Image 1 (spheres, rainbow, N blue to C red):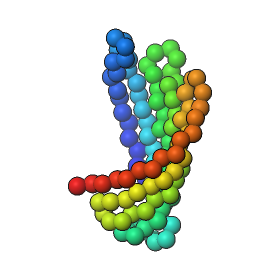
Image 2: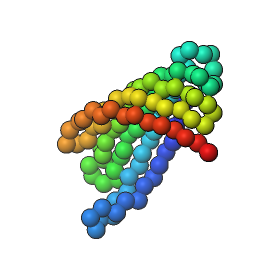
Image 3: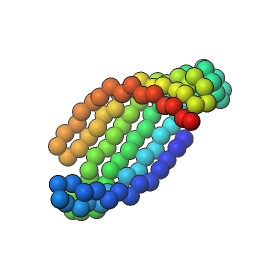
Length: 101
């Protein structure tokens, strides 16, 4: 399990905005008791974005997928993320490679 808070200062089209983000994720090993090399795992996260102005809701990202850990430094995932904003919602396929040095 992992979580993080972010406080962003953004400059968009000559406009300064502040935004708060909260991210919560979970990886669950499927073929092993512990998260180690050669592990197939389920990955899920939710990240909500909040504005500091009147319209507080900015967006929400909800993700679910499957991953494989090749080694301590290399893993990959494939999954679907739904992103919701005030103007609508869309799904996208994510294919991700994580390489840590």
